[in-house]
Image: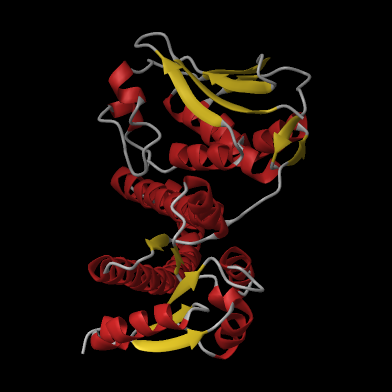
Length: 366
C-alpha cells in the first residue's frame, strides 16, 4: 500500500452535497477522511487529529475559510499541513489573500474529479518530500556534529604528542648539537621543522573549525591593541627572518571581534615574513572608504604574484607551485577569508610580479 492510500484528508464544508461528493470520490481512492461542518469544528479536530491535507471551503457561516486558515496556521502542529481552498469564487484578489494566509492551492466549484485528485496528490507528494528532506537534514546535522567532535578529538590528541616531540627535539639540539656531526644536526633540525609544520596545520584546522561554527556579536575593536598582541606573538619569526614591521601610531576604531581580527593579522604578517623580501620589510596601513568601512593592508617587499595565482591564494589547502611558498599548508588565507566574511567584510590581495603584494581586508567602521 502506497503512502497516498494511507493519507488522511480533512474536509471542511457546511454544504452536505459538497461533502458527500468529495467523500465518495476520495473514498474510492483509499484516503482516510475526516469531516468538519464549520471552522470551529475544524480547529477542534486538528487539536487531536493530524490530517495530512485540509480541503477548506471559503464561504462558511461563523468562521469563514480565510479566518479558519489564519487560525490553523497559528497552531504549531498544524503549520506544515497543506491547505487547499474550495470556492466558487474565481477572482484573483481572493486567491492572493488565500495564498498570503498560507494556502497552497485552490479547487474551484463545481468540482472536476481529475483536477481534485491531481491537486491533492501533488501537494501530498510535495509535503512527503519536504518531511523526508527535513529528516535527512536532521540526520546530516547529527552526523556533522559527530564528525566535528571526532575531528576535534583527533586533532587535540595529535597536538599533545607533537608538542612533546618539538620540545624534546629542541632540548636535544640545545644540549647535544655541538657534539653531533653535521648530518645529525641537520636531521634534528628537519625533525623540528616538520614537527612545527604539523603543529601549525593542526592548530589551523582547529581554528578553522571553531570559526566556522562559532557565532559572535561584533563589538568595538581597538586595532592598536590588536597589533601589539600580534607583534608579541610574532617576535620569534621577526628574529628568525630579521624582519621589519612598520605601522601607524594611530588606528581607527572598527566593528569586529578582536580575537578573530588578531588571527587575520597573524596570518598576513607571518606570510609576509616567510615569503616577503630578504630581509622582509612589511608596511601596515589603512584607508577609510566612502561606504563607512575601513580597508586595512599589509604591503610586503616580495617577488609579487601573477594575476592567475592571486585567485588561488584564499582556497583551502591550495599551495602555489612556487619555491617561495613551499612551506605553507594552504589554510592561513582560507581562515582569513572565513573570518572576514563572517564579520561582514571582504579580504583580498593586489599584486604584480616583481612589485611585491598588498594583502587587505575591509571591515565596517565603528
